[in-house]
Image (cartoon, rainbow, N blue to C red; front, top):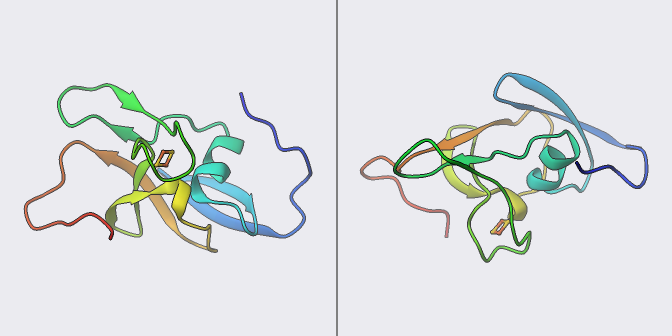
Length: 101
Ligand code: FES
């Protein structure tokens, strides 16, 4: 669906749902996942429907994921870092969890 314009020159390695992904230094997490063919980033609060990034500028919140155990992070606003573990954001947040400011 999405294809990189230039090859990855400075690789950064992350994991999405147990799947290793090579990104480019400076990528947002959303851009890295999309370039790797991942389009489902979160599951809606009620039901099984999956959602993915829409705006890529931090407005729609459709790109929320869990990064290193921290839920509700906007993938389009987070830079990739070596070794991060990214997971689908599943359903409602748990009591006491807060959105990233
Ligand atoms: S894609 Fe819209 S907030 Fe991230």
